[in-house]
Structures are given as C-alpha cells and as structure tokens.
Length: 145
Length: 128
Image 1 (tube, rainbow over the protein chains, first blue to last red):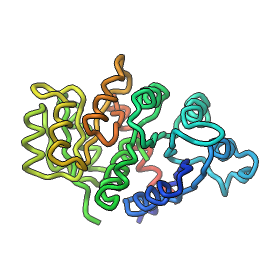
Image 2 (cartoon, each protein chain N blue to C red; image 1 turned 60 degrees about the vertical axis):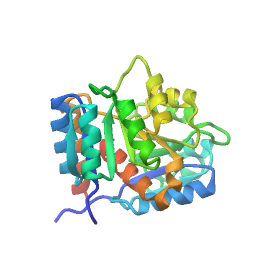
Image 3 (cartoon, one colour; image 1 turned 90 degrees about the vertical axis):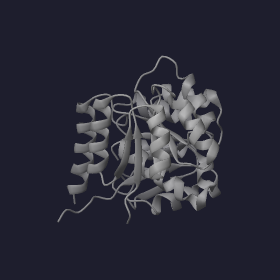
C-alpha cells in the first residue's frame, strides 16, 4: 500500500472571505492538503525563506504549491512571484495566481513572471464552490502537484 | 470520490495522447478528446464534462471562440485555457479570460516534461 505524503499549500490571501472559500474548495478536492494561510506579502516571503516567525523548517516546510493573491499588504503578489521564480531553491514551486480582477496587465505580468496558472476568484462564488474544486484539482495535477 | 470528467481539446495528436494518458494516470476520466473547435463544442454537448481544457489554437473555431461559446450558454462552465509555455503575444490570455476562461494552465511542451511532472507526483504519493 502506498501512503501519500501530505501536500503542503501556501495560501497567500488577505481577504478572509476569499481564504475561507478557497480552503473549502481545496478541502473538498482530491488532495486534502495541509494549508498554510498567510495574509500579507512580507510574511509570505518570511515563510518561504524561513525567517522571522517561520524559522522552524519542519513546522513551515517548503510548499508544494503557492496560491497567490495579487493585491496584498506590504509586498504585492507580483513581487513575490518575481522572488520565487528568481530564486534557485524556490523556482520549482508551481505558483497559481488568484485574483478577482480580470485586469489585463496583471494577467500578462503573471504569465510573463512564470506563474503556472491563473485562477479567477469569481469561480469561488459559483455552484457553492464545486467548480472551483474541479478547476483547482485539475490545475494542480497539470502543474505536477 | 467520483472521478473528475475532462474534455481535452488540442490540435496536436501528440499532445492529446500524452495529456489524456497523464490525466488518466492521475485519476481523472478523460471523457472526450477533440482535435478542432467544432468537435470540442459537439463533444462538450454530448458528454457534459466537469471541466473543459481548451487549447488556444484550434482549427475551424479557435480556442477563444470555443470558450466564448461554452460560457455564453453557461457562464459558470468550468473552462480553462491550455497555454504554451512561452508565447510572444500574451494578450490572448486576457482575451480568453474575458471570453469566460476561469483559469489558464501552462501545458507541458514535451513528453519529457509530462513524464517529469508525473514522476514527481507519483514519487510524492509513494513517500511516507
């Protein structure tokens, strides 16, 4: 029998309502991941570099996937994306950019910045989040998560 | 848990076979594959998949028009755009999102890359 290692997901999202819906969509999916929820960009970088409150590498592991909101306090999502994709130790982590906006500039910058996928948060509010679960499961599988 | 049913539309036979096999290995059910836009629309109507993965460049009716057609009938349809890893003109992603794509997904560009992603996934499943 094979035992699946827990999948660790870093969810960087400052709007509580969106984070709750996102967690629900993930928990209803195939992976049942362990979710680390962080609400600002500076703390997200601390988590990824194991700095500040996150020095314990075992308690704060390198995530298998980052779900990244773009509009964040302190350090914005595109800057985090740039850091992750520019850092050898981190660049293999797939990044899915989450945003409420269909702002063209953000979508293009996410793609050019190396995001594996872009997910429109409006889906969280449709069909009680069932579509969000299907899309996230597929996105994660395609990204090798 | 029931398997997620997928419609996969891609103009390349190579990509269709590789991706369909990879998705099946991962526990999805690929209920239909389509090589062009018309076939994608017909098979979507026929199979009602949970999610449609639509390649950007499809013959006849192109990917963005397929996305627009699917989401005009059902705005909440789970439709994602399959994107090449590098494109000169990323404006089309914006067009696809505005047409109703709920996500874009970068597709692996080679069999080697799919194999690498699958190996990574399957290895993790075997780890304790």
